[in-house]
Length: 139
Image: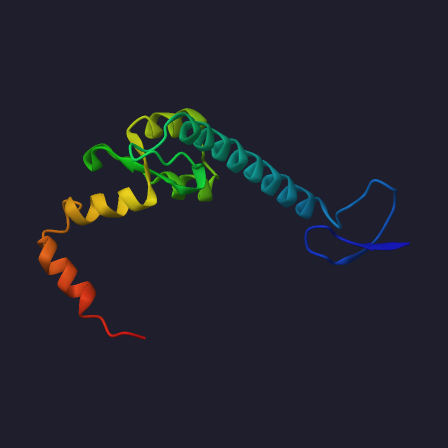
């Protein structure tokens, strides 16, 4: 009897009923992937709990509408979203430390904040940035 490997989808001969992978390599790869997904989900829970406990000053409390904004970009070690998406070397303790450097703001307030207070690498005036946006061709 044959079946398809759950990892690479190659056909292989089933030697016992609990065999799901064609090789040890596929089994290890799937195990690493499961561990990564587990770490990502754990990190997402930590971020969600923080967002639920810290609504935006404007009153928005829906977690999907909230962003984590670093209070001081100079003390930013990494972007939280990138750390969660990579997840290979994710440590929840490091994530919690980075989240403590942030404040929860809704997406609208976050955008407004960056227009009024641009990041240090962007030295253009507010008017210059708005003119650049307005001068883009309309599609």
